[in-house]
Length: 364
Image 1 (spheres, rainbow, N blue to C red):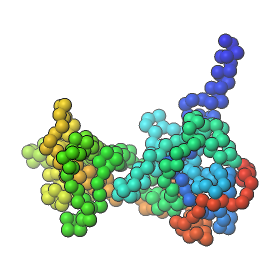
Image 2: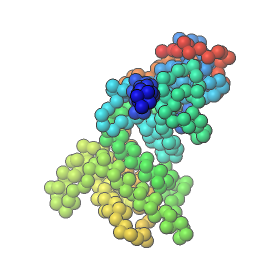
Image 3: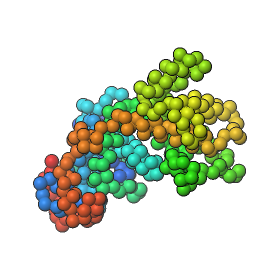
């Protein structure tokens, strides 16, 4: 028993199960890869070699690096987490920040589930499947990854920076994205005048209604929570003084005129703001029955309204892309090298240089 206790202590010291810690503070961001272009600091344009590890940007307690783990494969994003700086509250990881950025910047057309593959005693010269992993299956991904270019993330630094800086914007964005994961529609068409829409939002067929109702209800619920995160709950609209306070709070939160028309429902923004919370209560309390009167148009309007609030808050509070890149300490040399790359900015290949894996070839 003594020997077994000592062995358990040794194993726990080397493979502590609660990362991030001294033994396990690196994690590959799963579900995301980068096309190989050129990013070796101070070098002429050239492809990366297996084992190359290059600084990309910082996200709070995390230093995000580009890691080329093996020959002729796309590079990976690696988070190096400082355990002493991880917040005591809810940790907004780089994985969830990048996931929200993809959805927000694509008008909800694209979404990708991202996560962490934790690595013990990380060694850049060994491919992911040969690392010591917290979860063994993380070394054998199913291949469901979105592949981006380096400049894709440079161009979206302003979204990343605001998601980190503003908890209210982060919460509202997360709720909005989960609303669209539950109930998707063409947001771009919903924002256009009727004569310019390329897609309609038809009501579900009778044989699909029972399946669609929970999706639409969840879309309304999450959209309302999104609006609540930015504007709070509406007050008494029958009391002129309270209504004026609601408008004052509105103007302090977003720059949209509350008395302007929300074209999708042909009401003012403020009128629909009150309607939305009534629809939320209807969607949230089904009391054991399917509501036959629920229309898809109501979910479309709720989610579109929520998107407009999030987008307006972003326009109001976001810094410029260049300033965001500086705040997040983006490695500007990466973009300069990409501009000089034979593949051009936004181009790339998964090929790597013909080179031995040399762990000591690690670039700052």
